[in-house]
Amino acid sequence: MIFCMSYNVSMFYLIANWKAHMTQDGVNEWLKIFKNEYVPSEHISIIICPPIIQLETLASHLESVKNVFLGVQDTSRFPRGSFTGETPAELLPTYVRYGIIGHAERRQYFGETNTDVAEKVKQLAARTIKPIVCVRSSADTVPSQSQLVAYEPESSIGSDRAAPVEEAVETKKNLHLTAEQLFIYGGNVNKDTVHGFVKSNEVSGFLVGRASLNPRDLLSIASKCVV
Ligand code: PGA
Image 1 (cartoon, rainbow, N blue to C red):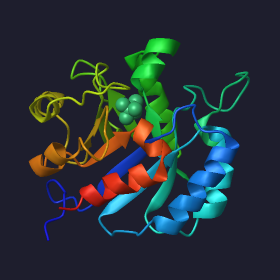
Image 2 (cartoon, rainbow, N blue to C red):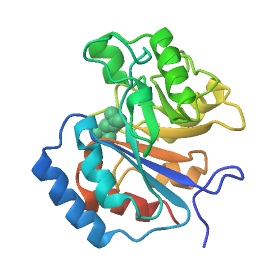
Image 3 (cartoon, rainbow, N blue to C red):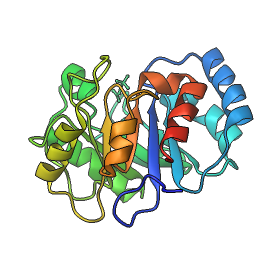
């Protein structure tokens, strides 16, 4: 059996970005199915990034589930202090292990810049929360503390067209990642679009939006990451 991994990194990452979709009833239903049908693989880490208010529910159900971790979809660029409405990294529960930073939607709707991204990455890194930095192209900056770097072309996010594998590989090359930084692809990832990426052996994981809202779809993607 050949496992889908790149370089000598033996772990493949499936990052579920729930955005602002899931209701509390939806979380309970998702958990029921996921816990029932999930079979851990020592080669796949599943990182669930729900809205912050749903973290606690997920943590209480998934704490002892192997290779499943929790993440946030954003963090404040500020430390703890008088910043109304913000959620600084320092206030996140210790079970939060990852944080998505610089998603294209944050850049588009909230005006986030590469400078904001760099500040946020610093805040997460200071809490030893692993930053998953999203870039729209190789023109976006990758801060040095980024551990997972997700290429998500805007034309693919929320669309029915994943980027061609060759385009992703070209972007990876142009990003000049360090040996410690893993390349992730995102944008219309589902069970029918992953094959070429997996086969290329050039990606270390996927950032999954819509398909992660259905636990069976997410698990189906996971099953395709082992060929
Ligand atoms: P999608 O979203 O999988 O629904 O295209 C991906 C993302 O925005 O992270």
